[in-house]
Length: 199
Image 1 (cartoon, rainbow, N blue to C red):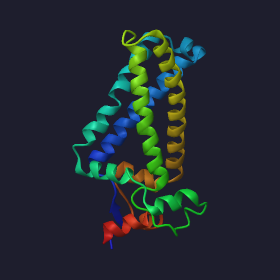
Image 2 (cartoon, helix red, strand yellow):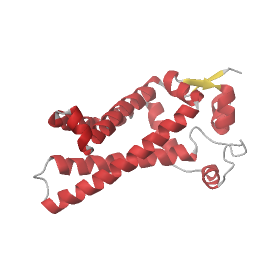
Image 3 (tube, rainbow, N blue to C red):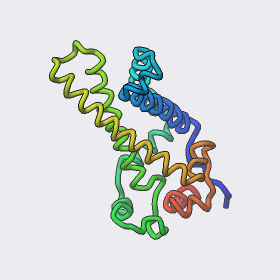
Image 4 (cartoon, helix red, strand yellow):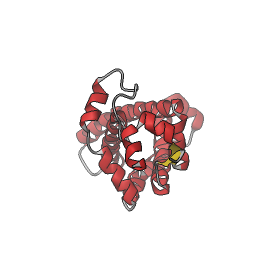
């Protein structure tokens, strides 16, 4: 048996990196725009705002381009459904003891993917309403601003949680960085997927 298992293709890793860069740009520029004292230090409000808008509008592009990759589409299908094992994983406190055989993605990763995708759609829609002020009446723009701010806060917390989990798992980071993980890690963390790849 091989010591490593292929986990992500170059196309999947490129999508992840592009989304991470664009998402990071959106979150940093949003923090600057939202905090008046930071904005005073940074200056150039219009430039910061335009970087934020362009990064936000570009955010779905790598995800859409990723659909050209069969491996990316396959992973989207995996992320799109919860299995009986996933439901057990979500409701137990001992989810990491290896008794629940996890596929390529655990239920937490699936829920995170759904929340990020949904938040991105909400932010794109509300951001467009805020930027192109002539699209709708003022009351809708006020509502869009409220929703945009809270969705951005929620997404920022999701991203911080994602980064925190990644920091604690160097092997998972390696899978996204170079595309392969140790077979030992795969059998421990994603046993059903390891069996699928090795079988």
